[in-house]
Amino acid sequence: SYELTQPPSVSVSPGQTARVTCSGDALPKQYAYWYQQKPGQAPVLVIYKDSERPSGIPERFSGSSSGTTVTLTISGVQAEDEADYYCQSADSSGSYYVFGTGTKVTVL
Amino acid sequence: EVQLVESGGGLVKPGGSLRLSCAASGFTFISYGMNWVRQAPGKGLEWVSSISSSSSYIYYADSVMGRFTISRDNAKNSLYLQMNSLRAEDTAVYYCARDGDGYCSSSSCPFDPWGQGTLVTVSS
Image 1 (cartoon, chains in turn red, cyan):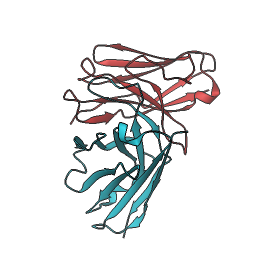
Image 2 (tube, rainbow over the protein chains, first blue to last red):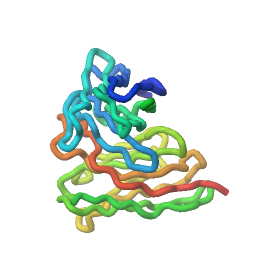
Image 3 (cartoon, rainbow over the protein chains, first blue to last red):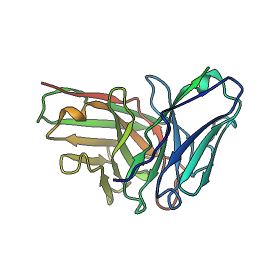
Image 4 (cartoon, rainbow over the protein chains, first blue to last red):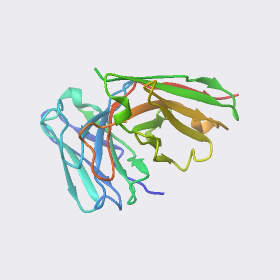
């Protein structure tokens, strides 16, 4: 089955830049989406179509894509950005969704 | 305000059945595809099933194929997940989520927004 691989954890100091990667064979053919999930809360969409930002999401959140890897970048990290982040995409046929393994972003 | 409210979770024995519901409000339900996603305690997100706006297209994860059935009632603005032959590994919080408004590509959609989830525990 199709898999998306993320690093388990990323640590960053306040004001610095956090980068979370997501790798998958179908990513050159399918868009990726990113979600933020805080403890006890439902996930929130922060990036769609690799690099677009939904309304209401701060500009410090951005996304990029290169080959089989997509990257979520949080510039000028704030304490409130501490959360789990998940990428999501579809298989090459578009009929099967998959979530990445998840990355815990810790603000030191 | 867009709202999704799940219900129907609870404790069930292995091999048992449960039906989850998701009540939608604040948007034109018939216009959107809908989805179920689950999260086992302390684990990551797992996509479960998706259904198109008219129920013409339905997809399942391999882990639930043949045991779970997704459906919707557009007249009642409701989404359902019938879960049969439940196993311990089905224990999770189950979220319903709408296809993102204006965020979809030609072949996939992000999920936005999400409900708060309902907990299903499968245990003897």
